[in-house]
Amino acid sequence: MGSEGILTVDGGVTVNRVTRETEPGYTINTFTKKVQEEFLRTYAGKYPPLRPSMDSMRPVGQDSYRPERGYSGHLDHHRNFFQAVRSRKPVVEDARFGLQAAGPALLSNRSVFEKKAFTWDAETFTARAIG
Image 1: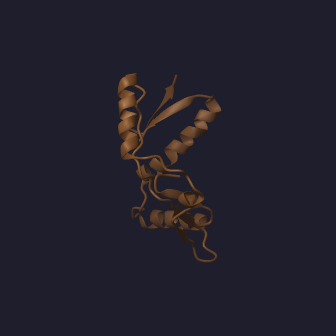
Image 2: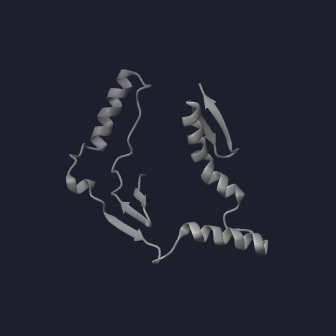
Image 3: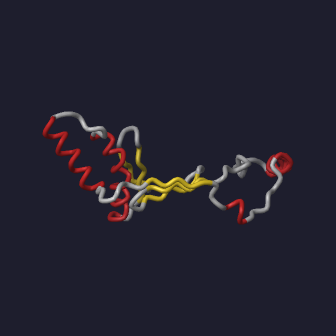
């Protein structure tokens, strides 16, 4: 889920696009009560509240991408790997890409097993326990 819609991966890829929000949102709890009240008056004037409706929550579009019949991503992945090993040519996704993709997922497993929360630094590929 994201600001543009919902991406579903289930034997293919489906993208349900939703309408963009009409207002930017805010966080004001660190300001004084007087400043918060003034901000809310100005904000309400610029972005009047809208009542949610079923139509406003419906996807505005959907794109589906399905593999051809009989395609196996698992088999294709291994074929590409073995071809790269045999030919000694680099693969499209190198080891760095693999770590970027797998690192946070592996860290979530570690978090479950160790019963600790971790932060992941995507620049340095390092994890740090929180607390």
